[in-house]
Structures are given as C-alpha cells and as structure tokens.
Length: 147
Image 1 (cartoon, rainbow, N blue to C red):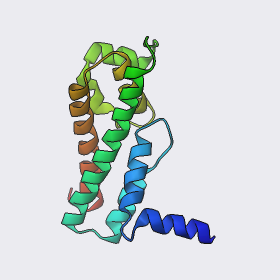
Image 2 (cartoon, rainbow, N blue to C red):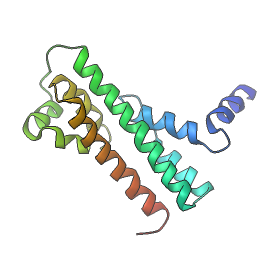
Image 3 (cartoon, rainbow, N blue to C red):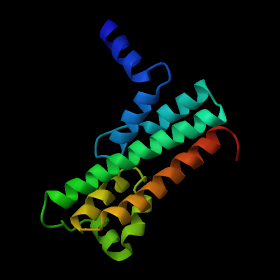
C-alpha cells in the first residue's frame, strides 16, 4: 500500500497536475485513460477560475501531444494506409476532421489515419488542438456551472 501511496503522491504533486497531464496524454492514444474524470476531480478540489484555465491548458496540451504522437506513428512507420472508416473520413474531409479527434474510441484513430494520409503537421496540430481545447473548455464550463 505504501508504494501505491507514493505513486499517487508523486503523480498528484499536491495539485494533481502530473496525473492530469499523464492521463490526458494517454487518453489521446489507443491506451485507456480518463482525463475527464481527473479534470473533474481537480476542479472539485479547487474550482477557481485561474486554476480552471491552467487545468484546461494542461489537459488540452497533453491530449493534443498524445494525438500528435499517434499522427507521427502513422506518418513515419507504415507506408500504406489501411482502409478504415477513420481513413475514409479524413480522405473526404481532410484536416478539419481532426477537430473530432476528441471523440472516444473513433477519435483515437483519426490522428493515426492523418499520419498515414500524409496530412501535414501544422494543419493536423491546429485542428486537433482546436477540437481538444474546445472539448475541455466546454466540460470545464459545465462542471463549474457557468452554462
């Protein structure tokens, strides 16, 4: 039990920022994660506006970083894109479809497909970051009761 407490203490760092960052990164990959739950817990522990902005920025940054890692895997490892629904959506809609990369399960494959299709880094980053930031901002506003 002491090891678990030590790990939780390290990740929480007194504020939970490390845990939220790690969870947001992992949640953007095909690995399971629950960054929304950690964001909600962090907001509940300190619902101040400055803290909320920091939490949205961290979650958005690390979740986008996780998606761009998937983009890089798709871009630099396989040479041919498989025929999947995500690939077909990106062929049809292009980089703006990456604004939906936040959607659970389906969205995790969009950045990978964007890499396979050789969608450029900057358009992929822009649309992915916009979608993910909007998701965390709306969630935060809702949790704080500002809607």
